[in-house]
Amino acid sequence: MPEKRGGRSSRPIVHWPSSTKYSYIIVMTPPDASQSDPIDPQTPFDLCPEQQMNVKLAAPLHERIEELVRLANTAGAAATRKDVIAALVLAASSDPEVLMAQVTRYRKGEAKDAAVCADRQDAVLRPQRRRPGRRPRDRR
Image (tube, rainbow, N blue to C red; front, side, top):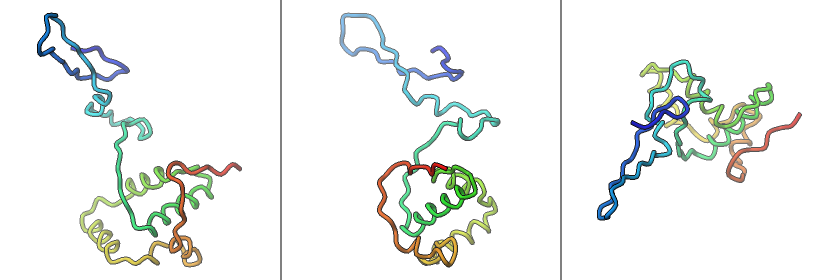
């Protein structure tokens, strides 16, 4: 059995040479083997293993996320898009009827509905071209 590293066990991949005169094996541990380990329920989210989620959103909804990050940071949150999206997922109802109503609202929604307030409607209706990656944080 492989050693525990960093408190997590790893499952090895064992390669038997197919045709060789040597009698040895190569044991390699996959880099993300710990992803399948159970997570302690007390682990803070920022210490949990992460999983990539590639999602395309309508441009006004993407701009709404940017606006929500701006609002959170105005209040001193030092938030990122990831923080805001994760907070919204965590705050979402687990009631199936409420979720159905929210999905229906989204499916029937229009671009103007993405505005965080009426006087900021232009912010979501005129998408900005941004470079991919992290946004620079406001330095105050």
